[in-house]
Structures are given as C-alpha cells and as structure tokens.
Length: 154
Image (cartoon, rainbow, N blue to C red; front, side, top):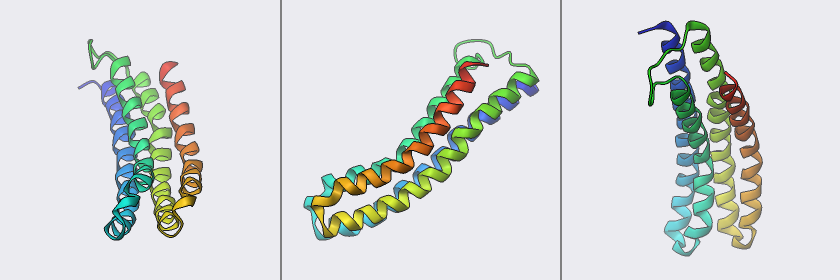
C-alpha cells in the first residue's frame, strides 16, 4: 500500500471512528436517562426522542467527511493515487471533525440527559432542553465545516 493512501485512509478512520465513538457514547448517555422516564410515562417518548437523537449527528458528519475523502482520492470509483503529501493533507483535514465530533457528542449527551430530566418534570419546557443541547451542536458543525472546506480544496 502506498504511504499516501495509508494516510488518507487513516484520516477516514479518524473522522468516522472518533465522531462515531462520541455519538454512540452521547446517544447512550441520553438514552439511559430517557429509559427511566419512558418506563414511568410512555407518553413522553416523542419529546425525549429528539434529545436521544441529537448526539448522533456528529457520527453522520464524520461519515460524510470520510466518504468525501474516499471519493476524492479515487478509492471509491477510481484508482487511488494520493502521494504522501496529499495523504497527509487528507489526514489533517479529517482531524477537526474527528475531535470536534467526539468531544461535542459526549458533552451533548450529558446535556441531553439533563434535558430529559427537565422534560420529565416539566414537559412543557422540552423545547428549552432541545435548544440547550443544540448549542453544543454548533461546535460539531464548526469542525464539520472546517474539515469540509479543507477536503474540497485539496
């Protein structure tokens, strides 16, 4: 395997694995909190579902960047030809979403768990919980945008 291809694939792995790990952890945290509430009051499932799903978006962002790199390098639908410098550029391009996705998803999961508790006690305030959790989404989006801009300019 060419070293450039290795670094490009390493970047894909970073983007997908780290953002996916953060999302799975965040969704798990929020879902654990929601399970207890839903067991007591199943009618709150719809309001809690949004809070459970929010930390999962970071994994999607990482997957999008990973697929973009696979397409740009020719791994999907072509002959892979990245040289070492280009491979390192793709690896570096994947780092913003990898780390922003990982840390923001874990944090968002904790905020969503608190939002689940708020919704359990005061269902009419569920929109405030969603807004609070969405504030953390901004940082995942910033990481995604930076990675996206770098990948399309390599």
